Image (cartoon, rainbow, N blue to C red):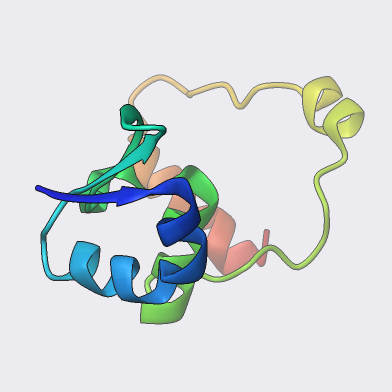
Length: 99
């Protein structure tokens, strides 16, 4: 594991991050004592916002067209399933109606 003092890290951050991108961890020290570690993150370490942005970038999802009105959403009555109907049939019917 590579070591760098705080001042070295400040002056050579780009270089340290290049090492991290290649899979190496970097230990940051202050007066010789470890205070932090910079290490590669896994894909599942992405935050929800970053994960959603990645889905939009890949064309899997679309960004919202408007912001969510929480009060209106919560006051909307839940859809009731009719006896014998499947959820997929109801969704197809709603799409045909343009809802």
